[in-house]
Length: 209
Ligand code: SF4
Image (cartoon, rainbow, N blue to C red):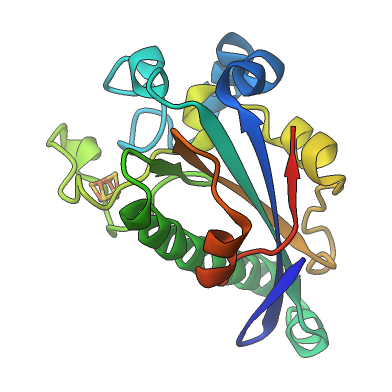
């Protein structure tokens, strides 16, 4: 496990790699998860989110490996103490998670450049623009940068977190949780080596399934 630091939080990364057919068989259930997605305010309003504007099966078909990255994000004691109202908890939670997510996306895009024919998937909806162009039915304005949400393909993030990383997902209640969890993925034709994760500052422990 590798630790990354930035202001107010400590991030632990773990990686796990699993062949795509098994990954899809075990963790993809589009029909079930689309029902949850339809309840989300992002549904149909972000290009990263369902309904996807392309054939999801054709998108996933070229990839042999799902390289999963789990980030466990621990707010420090001062950050937890300072978030002492419902509004502050919500704002701090959003700030912590969105910054960690942007940081992970950047690192995974850097790995993509080193692995021909790979693409990363993100955790939750795209937040690169203040207002997504989808709301006006215009094409994505950053097609080279956007990375689609794992959820948009119907992947079961709770099961992935529990079964591949043995981590219980915690939520904000009357305080910030001890940690937040994000799951991202790099889809590739070869598995990501331990040294590549390490060079990207992301992980040293890899479990292969
Ligand atoms: S990059 Fe901008 S336009 Fe594209 S999905 Fe993200 S928010 Fe929407």
